[in-house]
Length: 84
Image 1 (tube, rainbow, N blue to C red):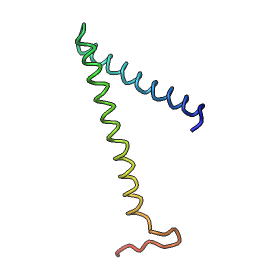
Image 2: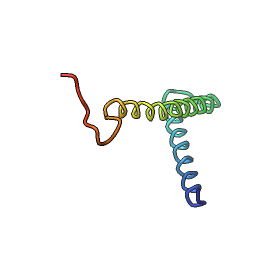
Image 3: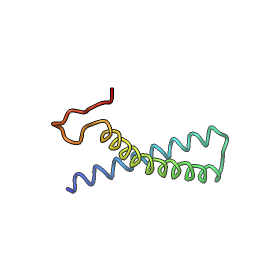
């Protein structure tokens, strides 16, 4: 991977994490959490969202591959046969 691409991916990942942090901060603050508890809730929500995304993205890839394999023939030149 080139240095320019690494820098771009780093910036994009930091922007994603910071947007999740600010979103979590807004939810916690509007929910009435103040003081040091706000920091704990922000960490809890942020890492919870990141863990969920880390599970959903590969699951979505596997699901879309499964649907693509089930809905299309094995070779591009074949015609799918459907039960009548």
